[in-house]
Length: 117
Image 1 (cartoon, rainbow, N blue to C red):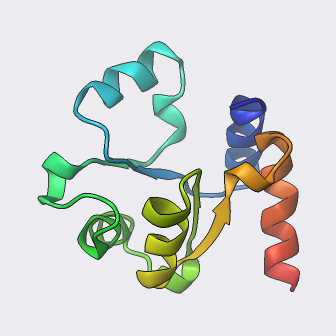
Image 2 (tube, one colour):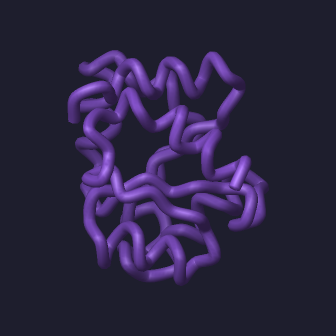
């Protein structure tokens, strides 16, 4: 999505911790490395890691456990209403629908606005 690299770099520069929860398979690790993005993420959690896939709460819980964070300290960003946004809310996380952003470069400002609301 446009602005993804910029958003991720800005979030990391601001001290944000980043992780991925995805229904993709083990190839995701290599794809992220090839794109030069893997080092931006503390954790990458896929179904094979926890025996669950979105929208199951267990995949979100696995990521939260790895990060040692409670759900209310995290925001999930996704592009699918049911598998991402609704599932994240059901797991206790705030969520942003990436489709509502003109560019992912707008994400850091959206997160600040959420914190100040």
